[in-house]
Amino acid sequence: MSDLKERAANVLAPALAYHTEISVENAKGLIIEATDGKKYIDFCSGLATTNLGHLPPTVVKAVEKQLKRFIHSGCIFYYDSVVELAERLAKKAPGDIGMFFFSNSGAEAVEGAIKLARFHTGRQGIIAFTGSFHGRTMGAATLTASSSKYRKSYHPLLPSVYHAPYPYCYRCPVGQKEGECENECLGRIDEIFESLITPGEVACIIIEPILGEGGYSVPPSAYMQKLRELCTNHGIMLIADEVQTGMGRTGKWFAMEHYEVVPDIITLGKGIASGFPLSAVASSKAIMGNWTVGMHGTTFGGNPISCAAAVAVIDTIEKDKLLKNVEKVSAYAIERLKGMMDKHKMIGDVRGKGFMIGIELVKKDKKPDATATVKMLKACEDRGLLIVECGKYKNVVRLMPPMTTTEEEMRQALDIFEDAFTDIE
Ligand SMILES: Cc1ncc(COP(=O)(O)O)c(C=O)c1O
Image (cartoon, rainbow, N blue to C red; front, side, top):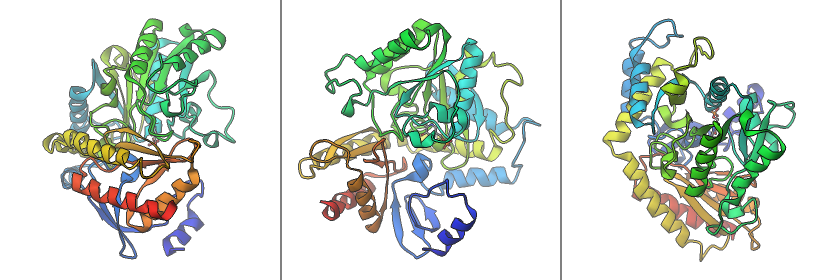
């Protein structure tokens, strides 16, 4: 056991699990250097967060500049970085979304979003999806249904929250064949309306545009479009939880753009400031503009340094054409991974958008292979590549490198990934 790990075990709550045993000395770009001198290619990006890699020079510069001015406002005074960030995001956001409430974590943004939906509609009901992950606070944990482990011991959770099956097409929740269905799983929402809560009592439906923690599954566009229609028909707020998918990770500013769907409310977090704590609830003026004074608040949310970092992130994504880079390098990666499926039969599925790439490892009968997944992560780590898993069955390897990753760097990482099969087959 490393010295740091031993000290941590003594003073840090064991509830928070670390994915590896590595202690890091420093990190730059795609590479992290451990205290023992070993270097690793970081394909985890601090859980899809350091979207520009470690210590991006443009962000460091913007933060240094802000640090020399002031570091906190606590809503006592106005400051430029938060307003500039909101103005810049408004230009990127879909439809008429152009108003923001900034907070610190993804879970906080989710809490804000459901409060806004309840406030705006005057209704209480919430529909979320099995397989989804929305955070650890009580409200967010109630919506989360990627594992009962996250809810265990905390009941009773928030009342009037119902779950419909996420359109996880590789393992269709209603027994349809991938690519041949009529989005039958959407019918489960009608069943909720028939048996559990009338649509007129539902404030919002919250969905991850691409399932994150739950298995990196991409729903069919038609599903998302029909969900939009259903929400519009019943006056229900459609919330897109873009905490993981947003800010360019999928090759578009917002993953909902892939489906040409404009939600009513969006949550952002993780990559928004490439590692500085920041999150946001976003909506239109028509909705958020009526959220009256005092109906929500924060001490740290929209921190001046985090906002300066986020503005620099947007600048860099634009200037370095990183959305295009993600699209191009992702296409190369997905094609190469699909090409591995013939040789490595344990790859059951390769899917994703941009730099949210999932590789589902299975046994002969398509049963999830969590054991092989653990071995794969270890084999990659031994070879100097850091990756983590996701999925209800912990059998999906997820690749979430920074948006700056080049094709050559992706090739190196996939060479390691392919070589790692020799340890587990
Ligand atoms: C889609 C989604 N929403 C919300 C969260 C919660 O974010 P945080 O851990 O910053 O509270 C996460 C975290 O993984 C997430 O992936």
